[in-house]
Image (tube, rainbow, N blue to C red; front, side, top):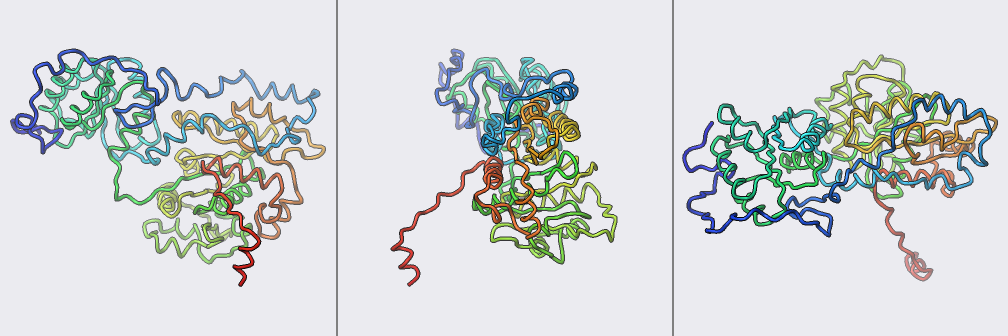
Amino acid sequence: MKPQQGHDPFDPDFDADDEFAPADNAWREPPPAAAADPLGADPLAGVPAPAAGSDPFADLPPSRKPDPIEQILLETGGDHDEDPFGLDAPPPRAEANPVHDMIAGAEAAFGEASLPRITVHIFCVSAETAEIAEKAAGDRRMERATVVVRTGGLAAAVEIYQNQATPSLVMVESADPGVQLLGLLDRLAEVCDPGTKVVVIGGANDIALYRELMRRGVSEYLVPPLNPLLIVRTATSLYADPSAPFVGRQIAFCGAKGGAGASTIAHNVAYSITERLQTGAVLVDLDLPFGTAGLDFNQDPLQGVADALSQPDRLDSVLMDRMMARCTERLSLFAAPATLDGDYDISTEAFEEVTQKIRSAAPFVVLDLPHVWTAWKRKILLSSDDLVIVATPDLASLRNAKNMIDLVRRARPNDAPPRLVLNQVGVPGRPEIPVKDFGEALGLTPALCLPFDPKLFGQAANNGQMIAEVGPKSRSAEGLDHLAQQIARREPPAVQKTSLLSSLFKKK
């Protein structure tokens, strides 16, 4: 619907005739070229920006060899250097993944929000911008929106909307100087519906132009360098609901094969997040018939995640609190029934609804996924904020881990790759694939390598305790704490030292 004469659809309360009259020489000269920002940020967009010409995913590992599995089969038959598993070095302190560190700030900036079911039109001038827009359209945070990428820029948008209604969000690119840009925007305002939001992508890093665009009701102004995450962040921030419930980070743990130890590591990482990093977390055991979270925490709740999945529409904060068992002051457990009384034929929508509601209960939600392949598990893997794949150094784990990592990389091109944990490394007498070769075949550096320690892990499992409780000074406990810090992206709080005198006074 066209606005009335003199009405500005970008700002219904702004009267351009009465409140704004440009000076005689305003916008006469084209805005100066964008200068390098010594702070590495764009003052116009108000969000962090990478260095000019940089690609935030350029550090991803190079393409793998044509047949890495076959190559490893040939190599494992020969001799290797001493300590091929790195057990003499401190494996828990494996090299940090640079992609995780680089993307951490971007993810935190828009809080893992997703775009609602709206239509977005992006009008691009350059082929490079069109390619970035296509990558942004395929991002998991924009899967509910309908995104259409077109060429022609701002001028094409003005022409097209002469004869059709405008969508909820329009992103237009323009290489024109300030005067022409404002003139085309005025023409776009004449054909724009009042509820449409407009984002302008320009080439001039000009604060005066930015302020004028904001005065005219433009929602955001972006300048190069662009990347898919910047476009996603901009779109989601425009539709962020301040009244929406809090959403915590969802971390999914998945084993490359049965018996890899994914459940044990998931439980211990959840415990470390709460006890070492002093923050709240919820552990959800989704292995309904055979889950071990209740055993590992010595809990036997009457209700659990199966009850929530059977009635997802009734699940609210009060009912959720009743169904969760309190393991520690900060850690809650959604236990699995671990019985074979039912077939647990639960829909993908129920899993999605329940996990989404649980995310409002704590800053971190740790999902312990079973070793099965179903539609709901695939959905959770691709929608989780962080994915940890636990493998053992053998050929079956290598094949399965490679399949999962390739799937995740194709489906989540703008996210950091999964974290790889190698467990049970160094079993006496067992031929194993060296850690270095395992990581190179997958194009990943393992985030953690845990040595084979059956006594420590067996004692913890039989006692219903965590590794940090049984062996707090062990290398495995230190490694699990380090993995929890990588996932949570925070350091443990400083321990306040107390003197002997202060402790004596407290006793009195």
